[in-house]
Each structure stands twice: as C-alpha cells, then as structure tokens.
Amino acid sequence: MIKRLLATFLLLAALTACGTTPSAVGIHLDAALVTPVDVTLTWHDDGPAPAGHVVEYATHQDGPFTTLGFLPAAQTSYRHQNLMPHTTFYYRVRPYYGPASDSVDVTLPPGAYDDAAHADDQAWAAPTTDPARTRATQAIRRPATATSGAPTDLTAIVMNDNGVRLTWVDNARDEDGYLMEIKAADAEDFQVVQVMDPRVNSCGVATLPDEKRAAYRVRAFYYGGPSTIAHATTGDSSTGPA
Image: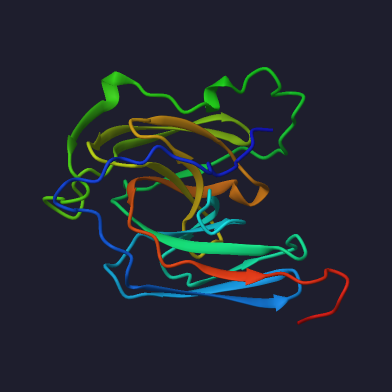
C-alpha cells in the first residue's frame, strides 16, 4: 500500500531581501514531561494568523529537526509519545501560510485495499509536474489578494477502490511547496496528508478506511520563522507517571 508519510525535509525557498516571511517571535512554546517517556507541547501564536503549524523535534539543540506533523491552526498542543529513555528532546514550532484551492468531494467504491491486487499499478501516485498546468506567476508571500497564488482547477480522478489522483494548476511563484489536505466525511477539519516540493501539480493519495467519502484540497504554502527551542529530558521507561 502506498505509504502516506509526511516528508521530513523540503527544499526551502530563499527569503527575499525585504523580509516578506512573517517572523515567529510571537510563538511561545512549552515542553512538559507528562510521563517518563511522553512529552506534551503547548504553544501560543500571537503573530499573523497562519494556515497551520509544523511541529518538529531533534535530539541536538542545533538539529537537524524532523517533522512530527502539520497541524491545523486551531490546534495548540501536541503529545510526543513513547520516547527513548534518558534522552533530551528539543522542539520547535513553525507557522505556515498560503492559500488553498477550492475543495472537491470524492466518493470511492466499497472495498478494502488489496496490496497484492495493486502491487504493479502504483506509479500513478508519484508527485509530478506537468508544464501545461504550470503558470507560477502570482506571489503568495506578498499577495495582491487573499487568494493570489492559490491552486486552481483541482480535479480528482478515482484510480481504484482506495486511490485518488489529484491534478491542479500551479499559480504560485514563491511557494516552499504544496500540501495535500483531506477532510473525511465525519471529520471536523482538514488534515495534511502529503507534503510536496514546489512546482508539483499532480499526486496520488491512498485513502484510509474512513476516507471513502472525503473532501480534498491543495495548498500552496511557505514557512514562517521558527519559535524558540523548548526541551525536555526523558526518564526511565520502567517507572510510573512523572
């Protein structure tokens, strides 16, 4: 089955000389050890309203940092569980910004995913760039309007009982990448399920059982600056709650 793992490293676009990327000095991050091997992060973002936040961790203060998740803007806490004992973990939060496409609704046929049945037909899921759908003329860091640079003409193609391929027009010229977001029929909000490089305008998604009926959208995004670093040191995994 196609793995829906978030990319841990993306090619970051260079910052402009006029400093158009919002600062994250408004983010206050706390890390609390709630069991000997579980850390809960909480934060407050007093900066410009973001599309969401990226939570990252490292085992050295200077990194490299690994992505734990892309979270909706309304979520202000995260629990990092079952960690290595007697280790210091360092955390930071970065806001991300950028406009999303209109959403499209997809209903998939019934049936569970069969790895054997689809072993040879997964090439359709790879992110690709089609020059015919690349315009890349609109700024999202200093947008002319709230929707400047948003992906357009989002189209969903059902590939199999549990696979959807999305295509769109790439309008942004200064994005750090694209995010694929899904909202299952019973979900409260969209969730990021795939992170893609700049200029990508097509990719596939292998759905989960609760995503037979779901809405999809694509976001052109860029990162804000990181919060200050918070850290916590784990204890002995054999002991009880802290």
